[in-house]
Length: 453
Image (tube, rainbow, N blue to C red; front, top):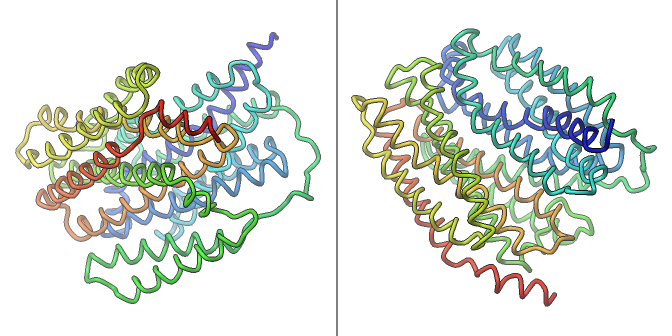
């Protein structure tokens, strides 16, 4: 077998594992309504399936990446696949909702191991045309996330919500068998380099959880003691991390490179808005318009399909003009898309709803790629890995906050009025994203400054 064939088989092996995290994070969107009914939950209760999954991913990806570097990437990749398999077997058998959340957390931690371990193996083995290989893995990841609701919709139609867990097994089994044969053997574990910022991880987790609980309290009334707790934990996290040699989050680095910090803030806002709609739209369609899971999945293709069509166009445009023009168009289409939500009524035709949602698909195609390339404009090659890790953490933070927003608005009743409020809030967030895009320095000026360093 030639080098090219071996590399292709390696990429396929890793891609089959890498797609599990985004696929499972997005399929749940069309399953929430059925899970609510089965466990007799409010939407805000059911939304903990979203927030806990992303919280575990936000903490798990950087931690598992560190562990894979120390204990072996192949070992951690196989461990991650095993954890996802165990969770996928047990989740449909959950005797209660708390058990289901627990199994989803195990699934999240397992699938979070696959991305950093897999990327590390690719960078280690494939030295020629490495960017192309990493790009293929990114496509697998984004495609599985984008089409998750549509796939989930068809599965639920024929096998109810447990089917979204069973669909993992073809990917897990094939990836596991190929991993044993294809992935390079690990060297002995290097425990001398083993260092984890345990306190930083705990404080970061506590900080995200406390803010999540504070925002969720808006459903009833503002909880001032939860606000105080959130501020205290945030203060402790910051002051602990600035004193660490190898911190979990490099807060000093964020202070020094303010452009990167603004990119992370902008990406958090993009994901708050996108995932509020990504999870909110299926719930609205199933609850108010009484669409079944299959037709809901078809409607969600308006977001996924247009996002995929736009992505290659965005890539060529970025090569010519940089990230800023792409992000400007993405921001404008985001504002238009959120305003279009205000036109959706209970009696609206499915064709009109599909058309209205397509603007959000267009904005997603521009914003995702535009934000990622904007980040790399502001960091040196040596900082790329750490910056990419924080970029993913920003996505998860945005998603976690989107679940609180949905919990507040859809907590007791999923109504057209509350759906329109998401549109209004989304428009305001869209304007903030546009303003942050306008303040971005131009690519030539940025790269000149990085070169000076």
